[in-house]
Image (cartoon, rainbow, N blue to C red; front, side, top):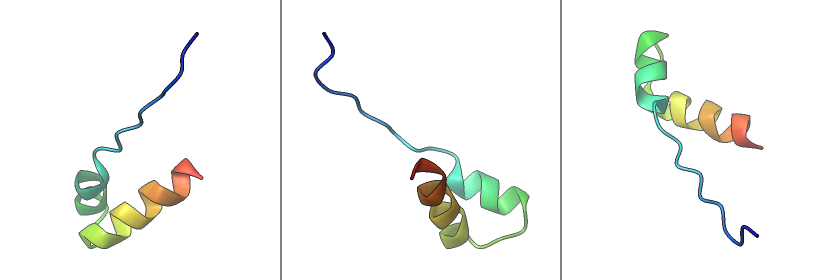
Length: 35
């Protein structure tokens, strides 16, 4: 039985750069997607 799960968000800065947004916006959107 699994006791722990780790989630490592990655790519938020690359995503925001690709979309012409500041890095902080990428981090915000990544956090929203996880909720």
